[in-house]
Length: 181
Image (cartoon, rainbow, N blue to C red; front, side, top):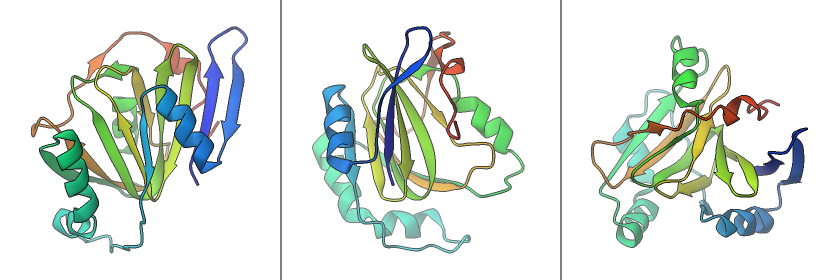
């Protein structure tokens, strides 16, 4: 189940909100410009399922977003439990950064946490199976997949070359509890 926790950035760090109520999650995220949707995630994939099979299962929703938002490409990222490069992958996304295009993720299976910086503080969104999050270009954020990640996510891009980050250098991510905290 999606869980939204909002942290104020005052000292000491405090939780302003903590909710799993879908309507509340959607309203709070919409107020800071974040797209949040719940998709039916009924498809179950074997570990050896290829990208084409995963994309085909959600082609209607992907086509809708491409049409609405101008996305040009979609791919699938999959990290399995016990992945040898898990620590390296996790570290790549743990610092605050921005993108020149939207970052859109739909969680087919597993979980991950997006941290979204706003004037109100930091919104941690624990995304799980069925959650779609659309982070607009220029939004300060980071992502935590956990110490032993397991997830499959569909990513949508305007730029077919995909994910390109510009790191802010701000150490705010070090102050906020990680996905398990």
